[in-house]
Image 1 (cartoon, rainbow, N blue to C red):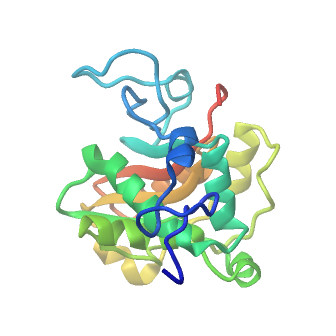
Image 2 (cartoon, one colour; image 1 turned 135 degrees about the horizontal axis):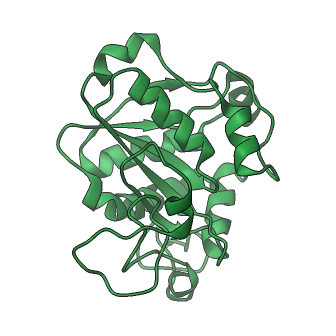
Length: 232
């Protein structure tokens, strides 16, 4: 009665903690139905047995096998990502992990090892937390799978990728992400699920996936809270 549950987005009173009110749920661009099997972006058409791929993933070679996203990076989806990333709204993590775990169901297997996209230590000092690590650990709790928060490290500091072309992003990120030497033995033949808050070009996720393969991972897939798309 004193502290009633509030909508994560608008603050309206709701029935349970860490949820959305009816209008915010309606206006949040959750991804469902037919999706690109590689990045998780929604596609027109009906769900069927075969895998489908978006134009971008047909044009750009992705090093990972499959990918999913919980929502589009648009309107309420963008608000939720920015609330977590720049607004210190850690209360977003719990519902986000539930949505991400649901989206990831087609990808999961018992030997999955979940790992977040890492931050450079200087970025970590300024931000004080890695939102991808918070999401990865929460998804692991939701699914009962293993998570290694520092499986990947980012020894090379890079400038912001905003506004860069896909090619420039890949060039900037070359060798920026590596597997932590202490955890290389855990990688051999494992299925790795890389978690990030949002996928735009996929350059960061590509470098992270390549680092996993260089350390002996058997297969790599990706999972994000949101997927940016041109039609968003």
